[in-house]
Image 1 (cartoon, helix red, strand yellow):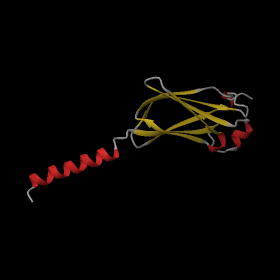
Image 2 (tube, one colour; image 1 turned 180 degrees about the horizontal axis):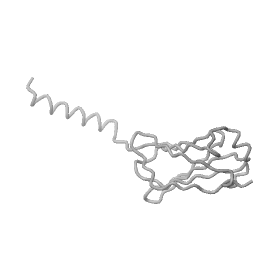
Image 3 (tube, helix red, strand yellow; image 1 turned 45 degrees about the vertical axis):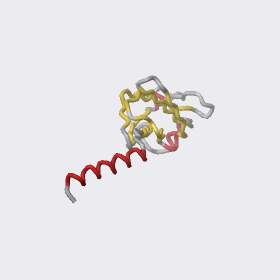
Length: 129
């Protein structure tokens, strides 16, 4: 078979495969939490913190907020469109009240097929007693 006939056939197969699977430009964002630079889950109990809240805002102003447990030490938001996000993270006590300052991380890139890691540390003085 001549090469000139082989390459158009391969290109057609690639285009057909792409149209069947669709073009997904989705990724995820994981916030990893430390308290006083420690991954020890006892820090959550020492500060009476039960929850971790992550809010992400895309360039169009759409906001997604997710809640997790402090002792899990991380929270992942899946299925985000590829693009830049502003991320806000705070801690909550058992009744859902915010108990820490809000940490803001601007211009976080979420890429297609990848998980973007954002590391956040809270110091004792940033958490209400």
